Length: 389
Image (cartoon, rainbow, N blue to C red; front, side):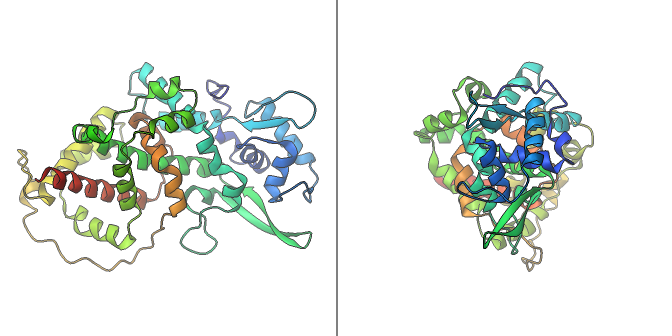
């Protein structure tokens, strides 16, 4: 576990947002390394060569971060001292941002604190830290267009420069909150939808080794890495594999689904208001809203499922849906490597923790949630086929 400082609200990503030197240093130390290696990280230089810069500015940035609790010293001694960034500034930013919307403060205090502690365990893992390793930052998953970075990596830039007859890239962190929080929110969204599906079908999936994971288990574990290693030896991998196979489906399939199925539903206004209200909706009520809407969608999409609810929603969906329109909007394909890195770990994140993660960055691209809805729908069909309904 990290040396917790997240009672100190001033230690957050917000204070780094407009300080590029300290932002660069915080990212450089997110995976454990010496000061010299962190400086090479920023300039994209491997081996023991010296970077083409005056290290004074970097040393000052590192010292300021250390004194204010953003990074910690890992070992003692005078030579080859190792540092590692704390995850507490990330936790503070998430608590501050989501707290304004009361996203998890509506939970009882003890349960909410345990979920935050479990989130700190997830983010302090070697699994999560490797998303900011030298290889990941200097070879980020590409976007759809040349030169674009995938998802949260858009919070940084790699500026090319010539060094010793080679072209290297220096790291420039422009939006440190975007860099961390968008990635966290995307992983949390996948995990939230996956775990929601698994929990609702627990009776069916127990035969595949499924059980619901509680935040207390992560808090008590030695590390999230060890917890995942033990959990995944018996986990229902086939359902997780299928979920991410559908998440990664061709964008035309997903868009066809969204335009012909999802847009054909007239969600009752009272439910819509409860879900879209500007006032905070307690997480438990939001879950109920989501499930009610989902059941309605499924009852109309699958005519053999009957629902006792009698609303305008059921009366207006008798007409045949129109043809699938041409796909015109751009989409970002999900890199296979990214999916492989989050697939089983995301299944080991408790739903309450995933719920906090998915709300940590409100500007998450719409297509992330659309792909999750599509994947959940396909898995639901698999459940029905399995039961011979």
